[in-house]
Image 1: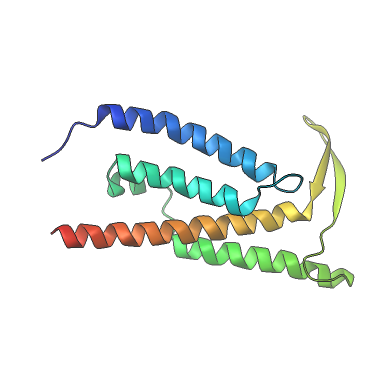
Image 2: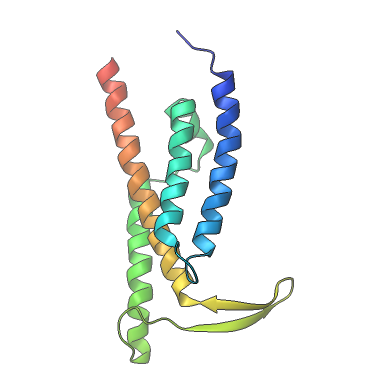
Length: 146
């Protein structure tokens, strides 16, 4: 029997947009203020989890790109470790980062730091791990209900 969850699904669409926007803010604030890759990836995972709760898991998975979350987590860990080890090339300690400024056409003088690349790796690792756990639990629940 299918339930009528129009209000839940409508509120979830709006809330997911707000949560994803906030996660981008948390991610970008990470190298100057508290936040960064870990909390940004966790907040994105919570938005996808909210979609899993409001809609069917199959419906949400059909809307997402066909990505294996375990591979995404592994790629994130590798990106973070490789970024940290990149400092060895310049004779610096592990996880030393470099920063500079770029003159971008629309944004003007923009600061760039290698810690952002590290944060992307951490975000992918956290996002992939959290969603692979949640997806595995939801598959187990579907088997249990039958």
